[in-house]
Length: 140
Image (cartoon, rainbow, N blue to C red; front, top):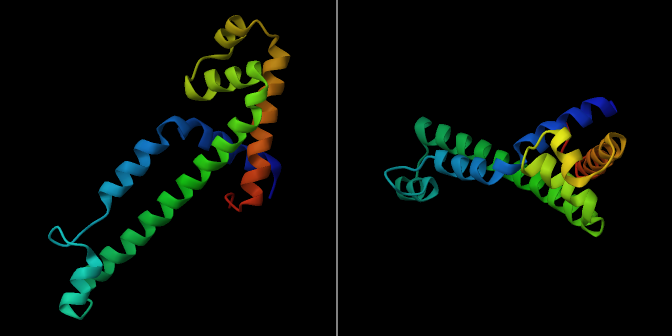
């Protein structure tokens, strides 16, 4: 897989990083149940599977896969944040960039660092996530 494609995927995940928990909660709410009961229990009670129940199960499995993927991405990004915690300036720059969504010129003024330094921090941060995500097979 080309590195630019992987970097693009990572940048997209970093954009949604602050709202991953909300996305997971929304996906959990989208899971369908049968009259307030779990689908598995309705299958056991009826002892048969209808087309409606089958569609619900497939949809729920798809939602579970999406939730698992989002959780893995969050885990990877959190790990990299922990790894850079030793360098306070770098950590603050990445938090301002990806958690607070501040523009780069504001970050430069707040931290009193050069534009090249900030670009290097961002590139290193993204590349570390790329490497771990590729190792964890999160990029497709």
